[in-house]
Image: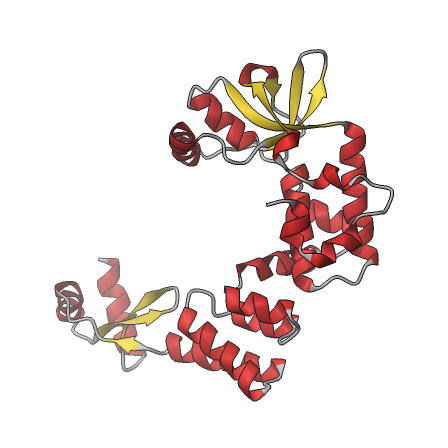
Amino acid sequence: MSARQSLGRGFDALIPKDLDPSILEEDKERVQKLLITDVIPNPDQPRREFNEAHLSGLAESVKQHGVLQPIIVVRYGDNQYRIVAGERRWRAASTAKLTHIPAIVRSLKELEQVELALIENIQRVDLSPLEQALAVLKLQQQFNLTLDQIAHKLGKASSTVSNLTRLLQLPEAAREALRSGKINEGHARAILALKGNESKQEELLRCILDNGWTVRQAEEFVIKNRRALASEVAVDDSAITADLSAKLNTKVFIRHTAKGGQLIISFKDAGELKRLTDSLER
């Protein structure tokens, strides 16, 4: 899928009329097969650490399926290419003993045009939140920029840019509702706050669409459901909990929360608390 397709109709507004739109597209005509030995990493790559386990997994995938997304490079010297984006894929391909890697070769002038076109027009054009999020994603993919770097270039707070990219994590139905204007960005953030609980996300979206809920009402729904989840208490009758209760001579139970849980030891007064702490220190 090309950048133009992925960003939708609003993406046309990002491209100045005097810019060749093919520069932004990752179509087959622009992809070349380069010798891996002719490709070198970028010394200015913001990522300094590469998780070896993840690289190993990616290398196994590359062995089976090849490199599915071309890397982006610029010419460097007579017979070499410097990586602009895709160093992990290049490293995985090297580990997988591939001899060639698919790449899109751009000139520095093209890269400057693309970056300036995206940054200047994101600032100027009234894009939808999803289109802005996808444009930020494109900047990450094309230039290996961190969100902080993108925020600086856009003159926005890092939290604003980070919140924009999180919109891409919305369920498809919520993305479509945001895209069509049926919900706004505030509604979308409320739905995102329930990430990991798809049924509650769906319920909240239905309430917004069917009942015309405001952002405040959506946020209250999130708070209510988070409290309900966090307050769920379950007594663990396992041998471990029973053993602790017997050793400490008090009630011990587990409170399950949205992120793990708590081991709770009951006490009646300061004297019993002192007894319990003394017991635990032994």
